[in-house]
Image (tube, rainbow, N blue to C red):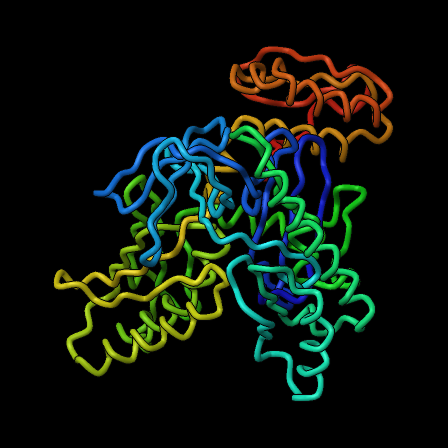
Length: 429
């Protein structure tokens, strides 16, 4: 996860998580209560049709976004059209594309993973000491179910043997239940729900490194709210001068590096190095995926281009999203490919549901000593609050306030009170 602590905020209608590396925010997760992230769910689906030109098949997993794509990996053929198959969701629907699934099932908990089709016990190199590694293998080997193996990451290496065996036994039992259910169930059917944000967070961080934001103020006090706002801006000013401009399109993410504001001591190579250092963090924080085309300042020397390539590969290696630095194209652009795991941060924030939840949080934070809340809504917000998910989020806030929220149509959103301060300022994230 490459984060050392986190904040989790269960607000009205959605949960938000901010991951930190020291004082810097490295990732922000946003998940609506009514549309949880499906990644990790194990589903019994039915193969719809093979697409040889795409090297895969489409499979019905019951997702409202449509059929999922199942890419073929290795030499093993995918099941024929009409066949039922157990798959695991690897990527949520995003950018007009449906979810993506895979056939290798992984069940994980507290740093221990059961991997179908694997063999034996594999342990991350981050767990040092041959004695400790032998103990882990000895504890897990007797609990290995047929047709599966174990993987232990850094968090699992800290478990006591008794706790490790309890977790492994539970995962093995879960895998047996999955296989048994798949024999009798009618697809599409979810066999193992996707882990929620709190569970995914616990896979990579111990409990004492996770702070729970009960009063909806930690995001602002920690700097996460400011980092979120900055991540929605296209421009990033570089230390020492120069800037990055990031524009996400349907086809790719375009990144431009320019020398705006750079002093006479900053040459093209220095600005490019500053941009490369910032770019890896920006892609991760903004949750950008797919092809990334970077227009660096022109470098005439082959050695400078090679050094920049090596720097990018080093900085990108710290990203858990596992982006790949492809290199310079013939046109002089630098190409990066970062797996797309779901909607970008900007896409999540722009959704009417996220905007509505933002205004509900603002209302809760500003409610002290005031009453008679009126939420002025533009058409998109009004439509959302009329949906079941929006009505449920509104009800949560009404219960905490102890009074009913009046909705009023307006061209621009705002919050006013019948008694108290007239306006709560823009609820921009």
